[in-house]
Length: 413
Image 1 (tube, rainbow, N blue to C red):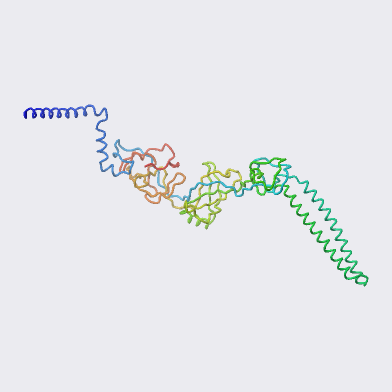
Image 2: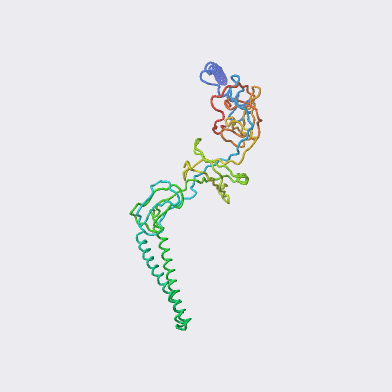
């Protein structure tokens, strides 16, 4: 019985060994055609010290196919503006709702919807007939008052003469004086009533309080308007001042000291940008007196000339605030800056070899990255072809196919 078990075990071992040998033969013959063994090769490559030394997303073999073709551009030192970017909203300096100041009927509308109006233009004319009739009555009453005042003065003068000749009494003279004062008071009251009616008459001509662009007109000729009406049609129209105009935006509180310092030195230029061809510049006009504790930002406004009406109330625009000029700014094309596990870096080419340099990016503007640390003026940096580069790779320089100074997409890691 023991002999049988030993024989069976020996047979199993022999079969297993033969199967293993057959497996290796199959891998050697078929593996290259079906990709077997790739995982082992990948694991071997990842375990190499050279691969681990590269930034995340840049690992690979050094020059697997020879020198890597790249495009390079020089590091430059130039005067560059210090620019802060923000998103702003266009806002009218004055937005005035036109409402009636008296109950009346609209007799005439002198403007079209959307028209450009000037301060003082007559927009609406209300029914003034009743007020003009009242003004006529008051004018007649004033003429009567003036006649009574003149008569009272003559009576007073006559009584004074009689009293001086002992032909009159003191009572008569005093009564004449009182009558004169009463007549003068009545005249003043009627003149005040006339002024009141004249003021009401000015309300029948509704004029533009500011220059600007008028909106939709809610009421037409023949409509009755009332001062106590709170409905949507109680506003006859709205005028938005267009030129100049405000652009309102929020800036981080960390920028506030630099902005205030720049404003103390002189006007701070602010540019509202719709797109690359549509820009409008003005000056900083206002900074809010408190920082929003919820967002850590402070509201600011720029006053911008808008004679061409490029900016429109409610419009969103990109805002650039120029805080000053950095006279010796070191910069590279923004496309040269890549992002690795240790932060931004560039590849510097020297004697045909790529050197990875960590850099400090101060800001990016107009397709250029301003570098605070990491490269020197005149050095050559790679702006295209970085994906195949590693530390110490050999390179060949090729001409650019696109403008390397164009604004780049965010760095890829």
